[in-house]
Image (cartoon, rainbow, N blue to C red):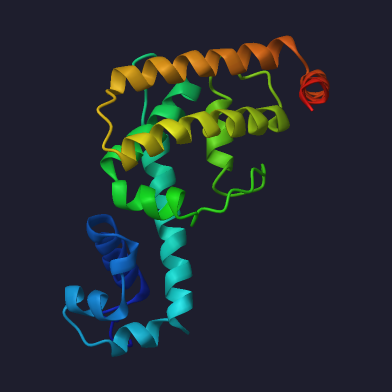
Length: 206
C-alpha cells in the first residue's frame, strides 16, 4: 500500500482558504501556502497542473464555503427562509470580510442565475420552503432572488466598505420590507405583466 500523501490537494486548499480568510485573496501564493503548511513549494506545484488551476480550485472552495455560511443562517421564525438567505448574505459581509471582498466586490463569483447552477440549487430549495414562495416555479424564484440580491448586495457592500454601524436588526427590517414588496408584486402580477409594466415605464421616461 503506497504511503499516504502528507501534503495533498485538500490540505493545500484548506491552507489557502485560511490565508484568504485572514489576510485576503491577494496574500494567497505558493510561497505563503508552503510557509504556513511548513513544507517546500515542491509539493504544491506537484499537486496542481499550474498556479491558475490552484487559483480556480480555491475560488470554487471559497464559493462552497460562502454558500454554506449563507444558507446555514436561520431566522427565529422558521418559515422566513427568504429573509434568512438575505440575512445570511449580509452577515457574511461582516463575519467574513476578506472572502466577501474576494467573491462579491472583486467579482470572483460569476452569477449565472440558472436553476442548473450547482451553487443555486440549494438556494432555490431553501426558498421553496418559505410559505410565501412554495407555489412559485424556478424561473420566478430565480428572478425574485436576482432582484432581492441587488438590494441585499447594496446593504452588505455598504457594511463591508465603510464598516457601517448598521445593526443586524436594522438590516433585517430593511430586507424584510423589500422582500415583502418583491413577493407581493410577484404574486399579484405575472412575470409577463411585470415585464410589460417595466417596458411601459421605460417608454415614458425615454
